[in-house]
Amino acid sequence: PSQKYASNANVSTPSTSPTNNSQSMPKFMYRGNPAITNTALAHSLWATVLRPNIDTAIDATCGNGQDSLVLARLLFPETSEVSLSRLVCIDIQQRACQNTQQVLRKDFSDLLDSGRIQVLHRSHAPLPVPGVLPVE
Image (cartoon, rainbow, N blue to C red; front, side):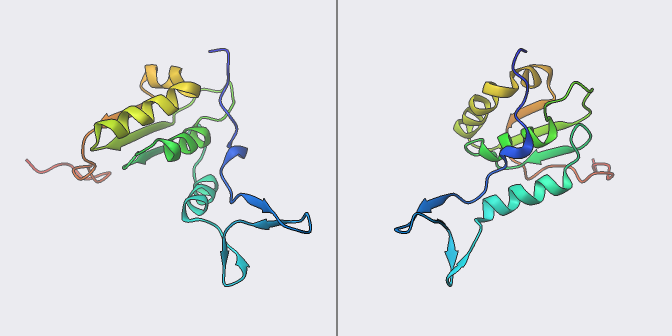
């Protein structure tokens, strides 16, 4: 594809809103202190532990696809090196899978087509435990 992947610099952070004195105050406050949303915190933590082009991640409730998009940007940064990474996005709701496919297709259509990114319509409950063989 002609367009390479977005960098992980796009990991979301709390937005700001202007104040009367033209300074910016954090949008999320807790007892008068700046705060971060749970989602932004998760994205920030993922950025510190996921190894681009190496790790595999699972979004077990992909919903609207926004977390899947962040994971894809972290796993598949703009690079020419071969990637061993995979992203598996799962949801029990068909509409959630469609939303996720649509969001990911914009920047990662080649990885969806190659199977490096998968969107699966199913429950995440029966996911296997790594290293444990299923009992039959």
